[in-house]
Image (cartoon, rainbow, N blue to C red; front, side):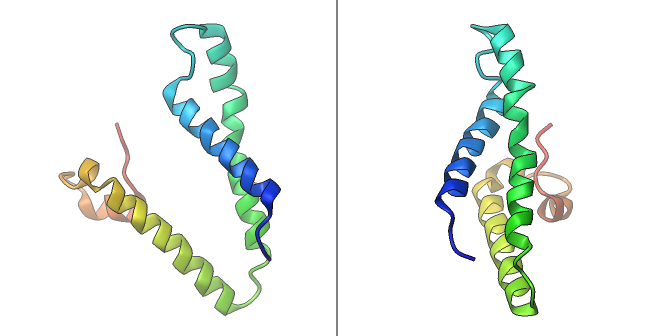
Amino acid sequence: MGRNLSIDVLKIILAFFVVFLHMNFLKESYPMTSFLLVNGLFRIAVPVFLVITGFYFLHIDDAKKLRKWLFRTFLLYAIWMLIYISHWKDNEQVLLTVIFGYLAI
């Protein structure tokens, strides 16, 4: 299965939704609009990302495709863990952080 421009554009929009969600977009200037966007529209991003992932995962029907998908997923995870290493490297639970990801508290 090849690239789908419509899905790629949707993923870009959803990525902005995730960023705006974490920024509490417009919270200071328009609290009601912020509440509607942050607790409404922007919250659809993660479930839609999961649906898109499922759509592409549906086409993995043999071990070779599964290995390729797993490698790409691991590579993406490893790259982002390296990008954020300065945030979690001094964590007491380094092994758990590497396995489960960085949790900002």
